[in-house]
Amino acid sequence: DGGITQSPKYLFRKEGQNVTLSCEQNLNHDAMYWYRQDPGQGLRLIYYSQIVNDFQKGDIAEGYSVSREKKESFPLTVTSAQKNPTAFYLCASRSDRVNQPQHFGDGTRLSIL
Amino acid sequence: AQSVTQLDSQVPVFEEAPVELRCNYSSSVSVYLFWYVQYPNQGLQLLLKYLSGSTLVKGINGFEAEFNKSQTSFHLRKPSVHISDTAEYFCAARGDSNYQLIWGAGTKLIIKP
Image (cartoon, rainbow over all chains, first blue to last red; front, side, top):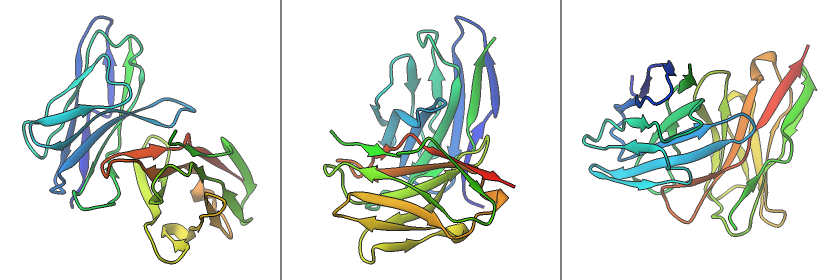
């Protein structure tokens, strides 16, 4: 079945560590997204990518980095510069066709030890 | 400024009762509107979308929404809720770019037995 796979489901980080969240899709979608979700705040866009080797900052990119070396993969690195990384992270993708909806993975919950 | 407003952070309702979850959008956003559902510790799933045509849109799980241009609203309704409808519901609208969505803060639907 086609879909989006995020791993791991739960992730713990020590202070000062970088961690990388995985997102893989087999939907042949061109665009991919990373969102951060905090209680009561909805979804906030971190980064998005429209094509391979290209990505743009979203509303809260500080302290995060991404790469898009393959169409199927869009990993997110939470760096030590992100002072409040505890959150639920969602990856999404969508077709390049106009007004198509975004499809989501099941998320990764990141916590600080 | 472009915005999507969900007027209620929580909506409690008895099982088998009807429910309406409210969503208003700013007139500056595109009228391409979406409702998503998020079950606990999962990603988001598309419920329904309005792109054009009939203002009454039917979605999955018995939900429907009505697009009202004069009131800039896109309220979600279900005539009879079930305990399995317990989830958070997000309204979203396409922004300036075909690639980005503007998200509401979400409404938690709480079903009382």
